Length: 398
Ligand SMILES: Nc1ncnc2c1ncn2[C@@H]1O[C@H](COP(=O)(O)OP(=O)(O)O)[C@@H](O)[C@H]1O
Ligand SMILES: [Mg+2]
Image (cartoon, rainbow, N blue to C red; front, side, top):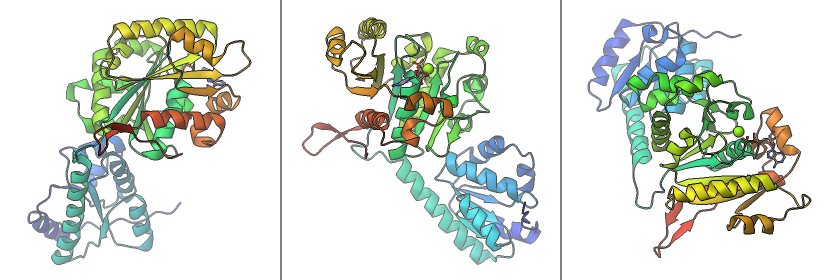
């Protein structure tokens, strides 16, 4: 393993740095060796990003490796912030800093003029990015909350939610989070082959001082799929401690930060699902192609109608759709009095993908099942106002 030396600590540099930051119109935080020494990446990232600085200047001393990992995490959590590294700029240091999304590397012997030039450029980039991220241009689509529901276990909710999130993240990488609200037996993480450190339980336990940065630190990223998950508790017993209202609040907070919040749920309408329905923009209803499942979803639809969820867009997904089970799509549609919007074929590829921990929509988006999930994602993309005032759906790229 290669080790790379960090910047030697230099008092004179600190003096020049301070003189510069006091003249730049930007909120700057300095990551000193002391603040990096704990090795707790999430905690360090969270405290450095608190208060939403424009610039974070890493002066890592002996903690260069930690600085790189923390900067990379910050780049994911708050991509608008410009991270700058102070280190002797060898090719290896430069390469690692750039790979971690850092904006610049400053040599410890840089003079004040150079420090000023680098930091003011980095600050101005950060401020522009922040404005772009927060601007509410007319016609900006509303972020969406999409609970995936089914009356019975085994209908395919988790398969649908993991693949829907994956298809959405292909078009909007980094802008999708999948929340596992099957709080007792949730298996979203395993569907992605992930072993999360933090779960919903940690989120609820820190509700005293709750902010978006801390919340984001509880998410587990899936790099290849370009999305985040908020995992279900490690054990069913933990579910007793969870507060459904607080979790709906968490979903709402996530929807302020992410374009799509897909929510996997337990069978039926439990109290967690009920709270999320209140804020849902879309309902994804999954029925499996068999008589008991269709009967059950018919009752669930009736119950949902009583709740008065007219504002949400409904999408009826028929899973295990296959010609050879003595039931036709027409039968299902007439039993439910609704049109089936998307059909997911019954295919061995799905259990194989579940067992492998790689969603079909990631591994094989062009397979029949992959295409079906893309079609569902295409229905869920934002509705935008068009020139003639009508509302029209944008389709996802296939
Ligand atoms: N279209 C399909 N074709 C084949 N198997 C499927 C299909 N959809 C789901 N399955 C299998 O059914 C099982 C239950 O699916 P899951 O998504 O976990 O259901 P739920 O979350 O509703 O309980 C999984 O093992 C999955 O592999
Ligand atoms: Mg499930």
